Length: 102
Image 1 (cartoon, rainbow, N blue to C red):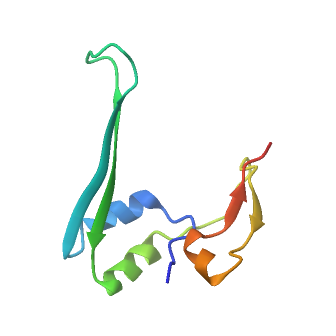
Image 2 (image 1 turned 120 degrees about the vertical axis):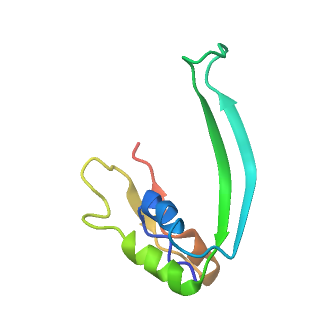
Image 3 (image 1 turned 180 degrees about the horizontal axis):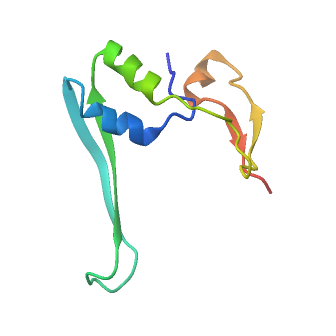
């Protein structure tokens, strides 16, 4: 069952991981992308990775509860529109389908 399809506060979830017991951890799909040809202290690079933690279900519920969205789900200035809810049981993990404004 996927409950994370709502726009939870990602930072709150990742920060909350530090305060729970981690049963297993995995890092995968690490990529380093240089923004410029100049490799000096004045230029930047992005590091992207997929982090997976195995925690208790009870801790996961507490993390989601503390990171749940507040306020409007489609705030002013967000021109995306909801095109459709999940059409079938197999689509439930994908969450709502959004279309960018043209």
